[in-house]
Image (tube, rainbow, N blue to C red; front, top):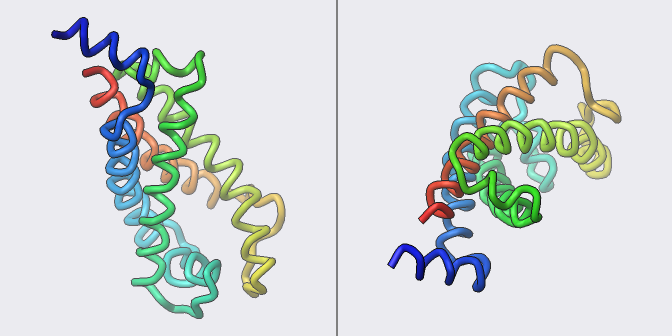
Length: 165
C-alpha cells in the first residue's frame, strides 16, 4: 500500500491535499506573523499599510487582518508550487529539509515582498507613509525577516507532513 501511494504520487504530481497543506500552513503562519506585526513591529502595518494597498483608508485593523490572512494563504500556495522545482522537491518532503526551506522562503519573501513589492504598491496607491525603495531599513527589516520566517516554517512543515504520506 505504501509503495502504491508513493508510486502514484510520483506520477500524478500535486494532490488536493498538497495544496490544502500550503493553504492551511499559510493561514496558520500568517496568524503568527500577524501577531508579530500587530504587537512587536512598531509601524502600524496591519491597520494602515496593508489596508491602504487595497484602497481602504485606515486605521482599519480588521481589513488589515483579512488581507494579511489572504496573503498568507496565497503565499502558502506559492510555496507548494516552488518546492516542485526538482532540487527542492525531495528536501521539502522531510522535516529537516522543510525547516531549511521555510527559513529560505522567509528570507525570500522578506527581500521580494517587503523590500520591493510593498514599497512599490504603497507608492502606486498614494500611501503617504510608503517606505523607500528598496525597503531594508533597520531594525524593521530584522523584525520583518523574523516574522516572515515564523510565517514560512508552518507552511513548509504542513506541506512536508502531507507530502511524506
